[in-house]
Length: 118
Length: 115
Image (cartoon, rainbow over all chains, first blue to last red; front, side):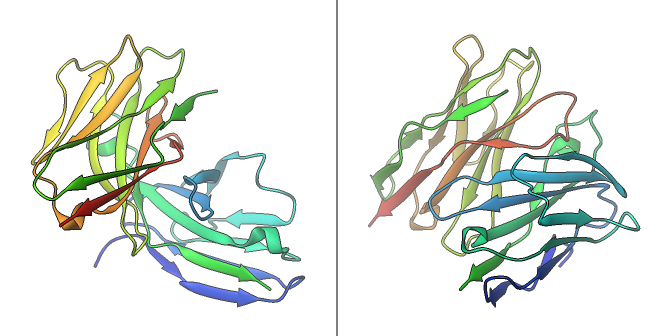
């Protein structure tokens, strides 16, 4: 399977602990996105990368959150000093960034990483 | 900032019938991209259909089609011959130019297909 891969799929952590999620995008997709989704809501944008460069960060991405894509391939999203309000599904997505075609503008999602903070 | 509104939190349809999900958006851009994604109970977001704003012709993908009304900023999804596997959350999403920019999602419509 060459889709977007995320792990771990589920993480339960105690409040105050740090957690890290990993995302492997579709091969040759140079844009990578992180979203957060809570139950019954649509995904909310967190941040995105063009290769290793972080292009934009949402106001939702507090200073406890950090995302990296060091070699322009996989990405990590770290949450420090977790709070109960961080409980959500964290979605990663990628796109090929070929703006000349509609397919080149389509974003493909992974299965998500569920975080429960207790 | 762009916003996307899905005014139907929940809908249901009988198997084999047709259902239309509504979506409106707000933007000052003249060219952009619109998408419908499906999220079944297994939770992975799957692309259903996509449309470029400068194309007048409505997109179709098998049983799925859209009614794109640019002046009204409306982008509804029609599902024909509904199947039990169509049961899912459906999200309308907007992408601003030049493309490959982050999607802005609506809150979703939960669709139940009833046997």
